Image 1 (spheres, one colour):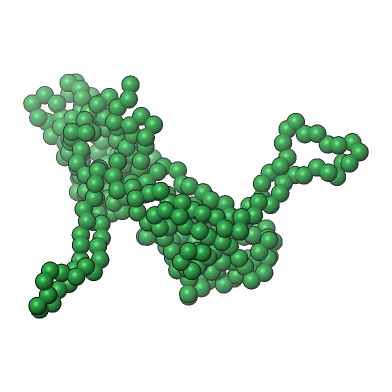
Image 2 (image 1 turned 90 degrees about the vertical axis):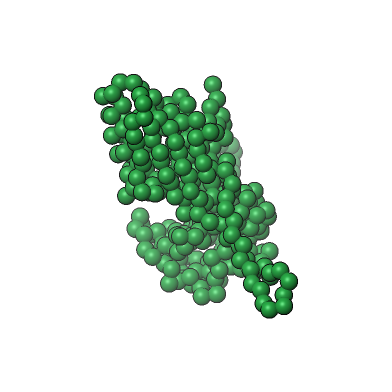
Length: 295
């Protein structure tokens, strides 16, 4: 049986399901507001003698989600135990995520409690009201999309057959190089990304270039064998870090001053990589989430 359901999960991994099939009963299509659509604000200017306004820009405001439902049990002791569990999970001091599922369709959004959930007894059952703030108003796919620009592909497989007359002919792997890779953003809005540079040898000043816009991300540093540098262009988490021998170091100061924390536009985004030296000893991958205006 397919049915709509919401699942709230806090940063400790504790979660509750809200649906018509859950003890926390909620009819998602009727009792939830704010999961579809967004509020858009248009900015404009005008001057004396001008008819109408001149468009300056626009922004999409944070999303408010309100969830109504009831605890579906007539047993008073059980109802209050479920109430305590709900209050524990819906802790306003913890970050959380809200996921929406219907059949094989699933989206997720970051959120926090706005104030506290209200749980009150109405006639027979306990009814609840959960107000959520989503500062980033966009829903996203659960898994990141990954695009490899340059990587090594494994070619060793079982069963393994080694030629008797030519034992050195075995290919264990090969380098898959794409001069240009297209990161196609089929979401509804532009989105940030996570760029990963991996050094298989010595690499000096790695760079990722957006072929369409001319924007680039360049790291002014010489990478050692085994180094990984990750650059995030996502709003709220922009920065760069080095991962060496399992230890993370802030590398924001090594980002070239002319670099742009570029976003993936809707549709095609063509990138290529380069380095001052050691370009063939580098793997480059791009990770991103496709974001949507509603579910």
